[in-house]
Length: 432
Image (cartoon, rainbow, N blue to C red; front, top):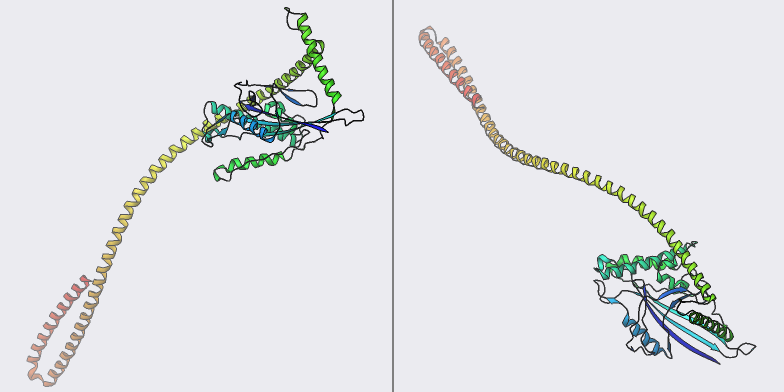
């Protein structure tokens, strides 16, 4: 009761140019030698079809094997290159589209067939690239810049949708223009974020998770596939054929005087031109805003440059002061080392003097003991002399002459002993 047709297409966005990856292949993915041209045009259909890529081939497939073969054949044509981060780094975004066309026979009351159309877009986004880390140069650097630019626009679109802005910059990049319906449109969208558990990639991992987390805030409005009657399809095809015939007749009637089109086509072209002029005017306004932003940035840059120059001068003065301080520090350290050596020498001499003082104190104590003993001996001798004098007095006058002589001898002896004692005392005092 129904017929099913499945078509697939595969398009690549490389340096903001669209390339058909399935052009020149059969249903099994085998190449027929035709080399596809790039830079396909994207435009709004003005109908329920949404965004259309002009000239994109759709391949009819009859099995999953055919679809996988075409996907593999298209993947082999994708732009890849080796970088420091990845030997087979994707240098482009890619969109693999599966279109299912279902025609149900004699469904309506009038016995007409009904057709339904459904699409599944598989979008492979190239990862953002740090040029300094990947080592990209020349062509690779331009590829990385194009990738990062489209991802930046995608981020701005997501921010605008999450913040419910009045203007969403879909047209700033062909990537966001093509997947417009998946971002806040009428489809169901699933985003898969691939991250690395390596510590070296922690910054990219955090940014990717923030990117995906913010995308969760987008609210799409999915609708059921519109059923189209066979008569409506035939009517649309007939109108298209009639318009082409009118264009052909107008071109034949005015052969040699230029290219003419029918009034309907002219009105359609005029409408498209008007839309293009509106887009151009919008871009002019954006350019003006960007020029103002660039002017403000340049002003900030000049201010920062002046501050940088002042900081450099201050840094130079600080370096000179630091050099002088280091020289003074070196001199102070040399003086400190000399003072340390002198202090150690003085301490050594102090210890030697203390030892000599201890020896002199011991000698003084010994001399003092000897002097005390001598005084005691002298006292005993004086007492003994006194006893002799008394004995001599008792003996009488007969022996006075002898006593006086003895006394004279004793006095002389005492004087001599006193002088010796004095000399000894002086010697001890001088030694002490």
